[in-house]
Image (cartoon, rainbow, N blue to C red; front, side, top):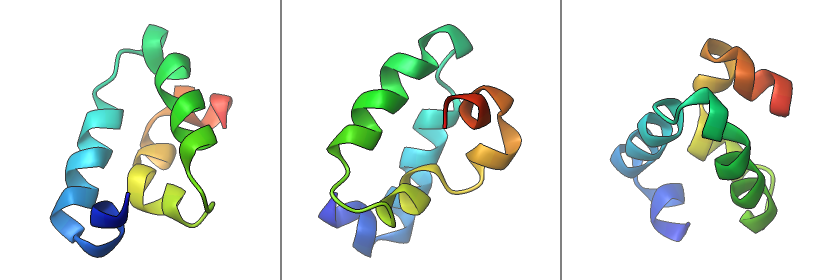
Length: 61
């Protein structure tokens, strides 16, 4: 998580990975990710614009 916080490219890679998860699996990916984040500000680095683009993520959050 420290690497994602410091590196813009790693942040984009994580956003792409989360965005490409099928909708039926989205909950099983997001719940552990959100639980494991120590600070809510990191969620911006992991999810960035995919919250706006993906309605399933909006529903789950």
